[in-house]
Length: 284
Ligand code: SAM
Image (spheres, rainbow, N blue to C red):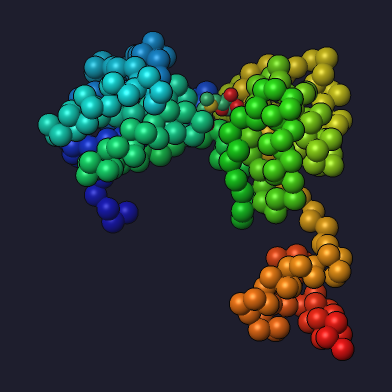
């Protein structure tokens, strides 16, 4: 611990992006309590939800104002003025980390552009909580938000995620889970899927299985509560040596044969030596 907390009393001026629990009140951090107690203004998605949280924590009430990026166009200048006056403004969402499938991006971007301090009060995030207990590779992952509700758009989005060599994380709703799993099965070749449900809450569970089997299981009994869906890195089938010819040709525009073979080998999973030899043989 070398950096002094920006939550010294009174709070330093700035925008504080603060995480709130995703279901378990005990996940409230000391820094969030301090921020709630001392903020000049708390921005939230729903003043009733955040008001209840402040009350449940037994904290004194501070001014609460509803904020979201889309309808916040008119509110942002006022918020920036508050920051200009040296106020401490706290941004929270209904649950979890703001900006993660929640509002705040435009406000943070504008606050930073205007030269204001933006501080993080990190904490719960359903995507990261699920990743940390799913048992899937976590060295590379990407957060994909919610899949589109309509089948065509959902299949297109999944098509674009084919072959991704990283764990994919989605947010999903109970009523849509079976349909999304069925599309995942048909577009991505029935990968194993992990479903994290009601994380940090009483009925927390983590279930895994082939997408098609889980789709069948949830078809008649959509799960209750909140869900995160994860898919591990997909097996990438390397192209044939012949199919890699156009890639070699493109790489050779700027690289030596040795370097081109190395690059295409990395990009495709083919063997560098075989790519190199094929190109030499072609020239004979
Ligand atoms: N910003 C939040 C975060 O950091 O996780 C997410 C907000 S997003 C609007 C809400 C979605 O997050 C839910 O529909 C669900 O997919 C997921 N989620 C939130 N809490 C969860 C929980 N306790 N267990 C599983 N998923 C959860």
